[in-house]
Length: 217
Image 1: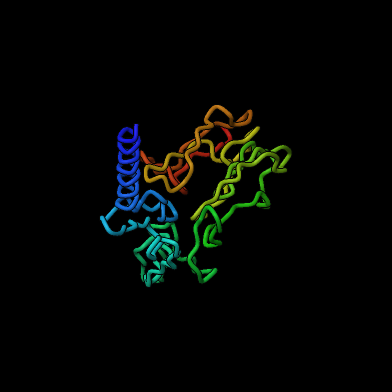
Image 2 (image 1 turned 30 degrees about the vertical axis):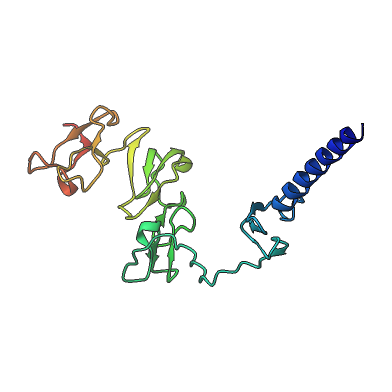
């Protein structure tokens, strides 16, 4: 009985010694590393593998990360400047009247001629008036509905067609070079007149060579 007790005590002492040795050897069992760091047992000690932004023996210190990098300049819309300093590839162009670079769809340049329907001296019998840029419907010599186009050049105003022609009105005109608006109203001359050609005939009937309504003989 006495020898049995001694055996049990020796066994318990061996087990406790092994547990103490194992606990002494595994230095990471107490989780000494902080902030999610990985603990690596080194036999007689440990090492903490810190996550980015932390330092210290147990990764308990937060690092103040600062990189000395110059800020990037903001990109400029368009990189190629013309002789006025306008970024053409950004949609800008020089406006002489405003003395600045503009985008036409944002700031229209007043270099353009915008025709307004206030042209005087419209013939009473004119049906369609051309003011040099836009066309207008005419009633009793008064402009009614007009187009509102933006024009870069202003042509010569004239009546394109008439409700009823009078003697001496142009009834036929064809300009090969497009310098004047073509007219073909040869059937619209008033009673007692016919659309007659001038003394000098030619394929081109511009200007003074246009046909007019003259009294028939």
